[in-house]
Length: 164
Image (cartoon, rainbow, N blue to C red; front, side, top):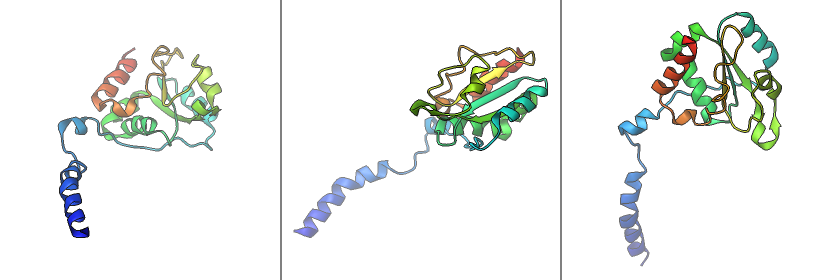
């Protein structure tokens, strides 16, 4: 009886197990992203930001956390070889915000300096022109889906900020 039950279980489970294997479709490749963990909760984010602002060039302030897959994805793209031309145009600062959606945020005062308040998700990306003006106030909080965006989409949006 046990042998019959095991045989039936394998007959039912075998087709299901094959679905759980690696998928090599174009759609999954399009969503693949590099991963980086540059958000240091012990960093002096205010000092890092001041140093970057002193460079007098456009700035990308990325408010995120290493626990967040969207923050890691965005940081991964920004640190990839593909995005090297953008890193030459922008000073990039990674600012750890803790868990703002749980009321345990940190460095939120730095986002408020740019007029970005009520951060409840990560990442939040603030693009600042070399003149100190925020370029994306309306969309800064819209990066919570960064892991779902393609590298081309992210690059195009950031390049658009550089062109301003």
